[in-house]
Amino acid sequence: MTAAWIAVLATAAGCYALKLTGLTVPQRVLGNPRVRRFAELVPVALLAALVAAQAGTSGHAISVDPARLAGLGAAVIALLLRAPFLLVIVVAAATAALLRLAGVA
Image (tube, rainbow, N blue to C red):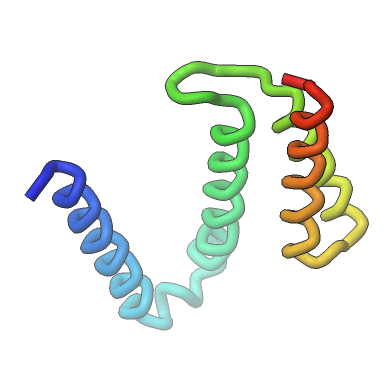
């Protein structure tokens, strides 16, 4: 078994354990307003970090990719206009693709 498969299996086991932990937390713990607020905000923070990392990096280096950033901007505008999520993704991808087709690096 290669190191990549070991990493995949370890990650899958960790995700399963995290999900199981979330399902077995007692209701009295979730009733605490601070815990509830934390549980509501963590997914938003993680998604924002993922978007920032994907939009502003290439491999292990920080890079400014105008087409990718324009796609992100188009997605933000679509979200502000309350477009459905699938449409937001299509708008972002189409914006980046059209700019790349036009020669914007």
